[in-house]
Image (tube, rainbow, N blue to C red):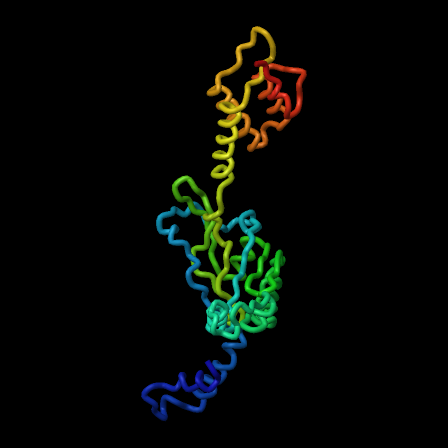
Length: 286
């Protein structure tokens, strides 16, 4: 609100001479000068669509309020807006239109940024804001559309005015923002979205490692010849080998055993042998 608008808004309604004295005018004028000087909150731009729908089905465990949580590392990717999105969409259509002079005339990432934005000045402004908040730049982009940053949960809360918390959903525990992020208007005008506030979508190691372990162990147990340690030794069944392999590899994933120990154990079916290394399991008797 401008100074004039501020004073006009202070005029009593209905206006009377008794209600609007010289002293009243001076007091209103001073208030309109002093209030901004006392640090009124600058305008901010809210980035919609960043609160997970899954939060409605989740239970909050605790807010991210401790100093340890405040220092938890996270990576954010800031996505910027093009200055002229309509022109860019027309450019894409022209690339596939044989009647267009731009048919199959592809521009590189830097040329596209110069033509459609974001401008170098907009990119620099967004970059400068986040680095001033303590973030480290992990990766810039030639088309100036993305900026990857590394920082902490506390820095994200302060720079984006969000409240972070820990939630549980089924068997998952995850971090997420409770409210929509916002940025100072002069920065937010150039930002489309911010990715990385929540880690719900990140795959858990077990969701990848365990199926892979099962597949490897099935191959080892049912498709490859079984090692023998000599006369009088009864080799384990494929099912026993499979179970042994799964247990060993899962414990390896958790760092409780070394690969050398597992190879020796696998090659001998649990008995020591002079063979060592990855070829030991192929020392078979037929």
